[in-house]
Length: 158
Image (tube, rainbow, N blue to C red; front, side, top):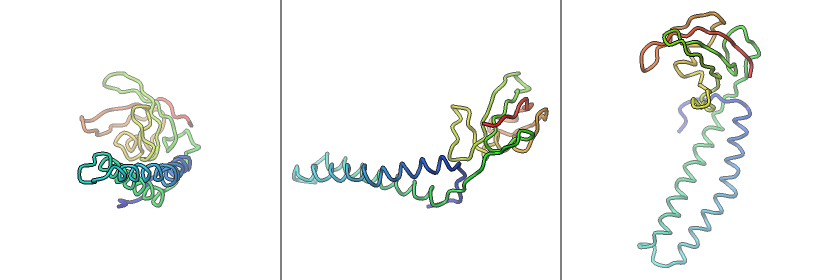
């Protein structure tokens, strides 16, 4: 199932382990109980409660397998302590040279990316394009919509 290593912080790995533990203990028992109750309703061929419970069980086992894969193939990344060039864990403030807009991005591993909250993966086009650059650098980044030009204004630790 694994397609390689999954870069993440040690905090994210702990969150995944806690979620896996919950699913394997509490949630698995809940679903088993749903199936047991649904079986008691009789004829399984026309039992929608049973079908729903079995579907839920399939989703649960799929999620458990996904979490195990993420945990087994986790590559712990360490945040950069430096602010002289863009690295993992840095908050980078940039100015879009075409539109004049400023934005701040936090560079994170792929398992922690959340673009809506400004967290972008170091594997994304923008994240990859900013890595290793310094304040004052103008960076041209190829994105699906074309090319964007950013000037790096600030690099801070998070």
